[in-house]
Amino acid sequence: DADVTQTPRNRITKTGKRIMLECSQTKGHDRMYWYRQDPGLGLRLIYYSFDVKDINKGEISDGYSVSRQAQAKFSLSLESAIPNQTALYFCATSRADEQFFGPGTRLTVL
Amino acid sequence: GQQVMQIPQYQHVQEGEDFTTYCNSSTTLSNIQWYKQRPGGHPVFLIQLVKSGEVKKQKRLTFQFGEAKKNSSLHITATQTTDVGTYFCAGNTGFQKLVFGTGTRLLVSP
Image (cartoon, rainbow over all chains, first blue to last red):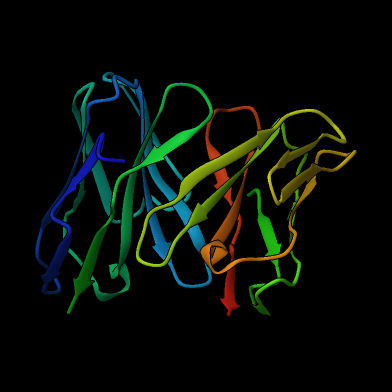
């Protein structure tokens, strides 16, 4: 959906670098999520937030941190990137049950 | 933790053939959602099932939720090339976060 945007769309970085992925939404949803997608593993939840003051770890939060700067913005940081964090990252939003996904960020860590 | 498995992982059919993907959860679900991801795209919500034994249809797609609310299936009748993509189920245990299945990749040859 164009209502959920992610930047950058593609990024190549080196091991040990700090990197931030950003997500913005114009849907007015309170709930936002970060997932990573790896071939054969589906989508795995990294972090989620139900409002600006609420941050929760998902199933694979190690090595990641997040910031909910506003209702519309939710950023994901890799403090010290490592090669096994190479993946496709999706941001998603929801009001209740249905989730709306952004276009994804393809991250490569060399 | 909770796991959601899907089978098959991959299926290649001829246009006009039927297709089914199965989803099994290790725990009872409050509801289950289905998403479709086109090649190079992002997941897009298809449907949500809530009731035990529920069956819903969308044109050529039939979705079922098991009596025990631990399994689900998606059946496509007479596949078309536009059905190509990866189909994910996503289980909700009632804590408003989804656990995605591993996905079934469907390829349809004309």
